[in-house]
Length: 359
Ligand SMILES: *Cc1c(COP(=O)(O)O)cnc(C)c1O
Image 1: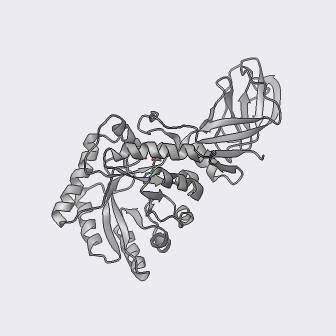
Image 2: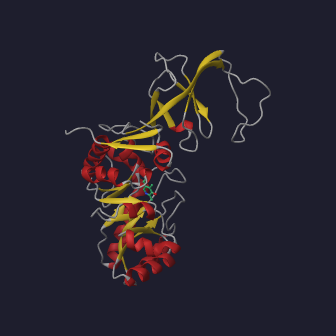
Image 3: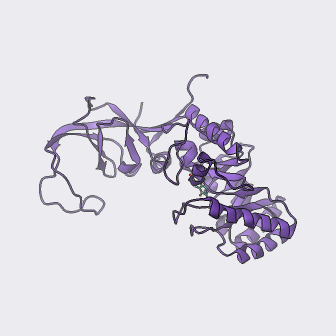
């Protein structure tokens, strides 16, 4: 087997999805399964579908293109680029939007291929990433959206805990629900979707709180890692090791814990600091920052410490471990969301995507 490789257990992914879809269903919330962390790999997307998601969602059009064989509606999460509107109407059924110029262009391109592209207008509830911040702006955008024949108003949505770190609560989500209600009353329409946000909303469901009328969540991290992202808490009955990285040991040596000589900058321009722990057993593995950051790996051996890394090397301290690591051995790590993103994106990391034998 070749290393480094990322191992993806599809049974565990599907289990996480089913658990969270069922939790959401209690509150009449449909789940858009966010596939960007695994670059829209169709095998993993299939586990999302088997677990019961209602939409497939990704921030990049290239990834949605890979998902073309799925019949579920596809949602583009990042605001469309004007230069990409042709591909957007071709590969996405729905997109999140906050710029009327872009929506006009989407309408024109959709008409050209006889489609109606669905628009979710984004409302900024204070996190200061995308969306209309002032209500009067959203109402004037809305009128124009409804007058364009190549697009249809599919709903409104918001995104919190992304830039500003604002946590979704009943107070800010209620504002979204009120805007939805006001739109529906004023225009005598009924919107399909009121999308409350991402994995940072799950903490509310775990606490038995929700705001009615909000009927959609766009979930990535919670599905792949079984973790909500407002407070970083585990979600009951989920796995945190559906994605694991396995790397190969290429050097094991006893060495001092402090470098010898005058300390300048490391390979990335930072001045490193060290504590003297005497002579230690240092292990080097063949994976580096070009693939994943050392701090996005989680050691599964409690006595094996991650010291750091450079572009192509990961350095570990194995002195206190019960395992006698040797050259040629492989070591498994759990990953943070950023680690999964890096490992799935890196061309240098092999992808071992498997299903255990029949249940
Ligand atoms: C990435 C993304 C999500 C999913 O976020 P998670 O925290 O992974 O659940 C939801 N909405 C938008 C707009 C995104 O870009």
